[in-house]
Length: 162
Image: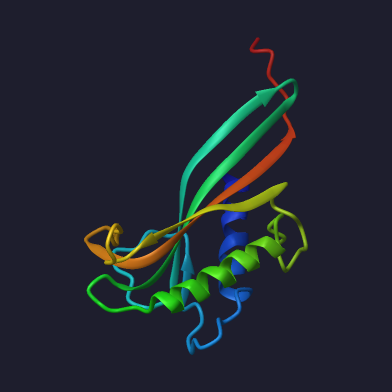
């Protein structure tokens, strides 16, 4: 299953780097998209993708996995100012991009990586009342976290155990 997850994350990173259009009024596109944890992010906007969980359901000769991936879109360090309007514009573009590619097709092969992928929630991280910055390592960021649920369903052969 690790190859499957690696292919899914590769498709997500490729979409983030290549497919999300620049929102109106913004002058800088996505500067970084990665699934590798970083000690410090210094270029913005940047995506940091972290796998949170896999929910597994077994049935007769079938296995269904739902991968939950947190796509953190970092806009600035928490001690800097960042426009709420600009963040909203990015959120709309990210949601629209993922709505258009629900099966996470790889652009070079055209192969779907899952049965269905959807953004199920967006969380805000900033210095506004009732919110807190996103803490990653020793640093805090103004960010939006997109919770992506990726469904993979397929045949599964059980071993007799003998």
